[in-house]
Image (cartoon, rainbow, N blue to C red; front, side, top):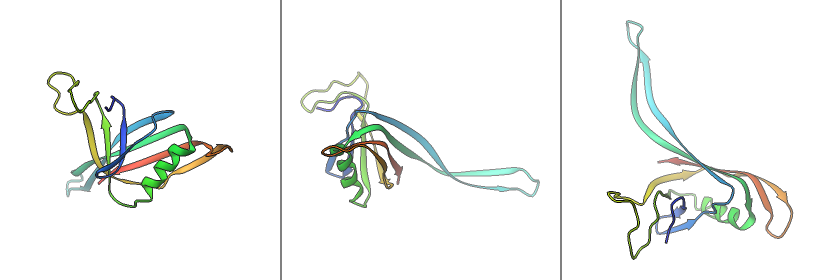
Length: 136
């Protein structure tokens, strides 16, 4: 069962549940456009596409959860990002009436992950972890 707010990331067919603890999700639009001034001086803009930029900021994350993210980054390929917007159970449907999807899904590329070690213990405690994903 997946719950509303669960986020999965990984290669197609091998998605990993990401830790929800200390996580903040930001989704923004990136506009791909071309702009030029016409002979009259008026600015013209052609929007070619609008793509998503998804950022997962962790205030704190443990070493195991960070290792999962680093392993996914090491795949160096297109990834599937799935963000559940409603509870989903494979045997029954629990989404709101009229809902056609339980999650939003994106094909993304992952940028390198910056991190700061806060606590030196078994696997460590990390802060300042920011996972940036660009829609393909």
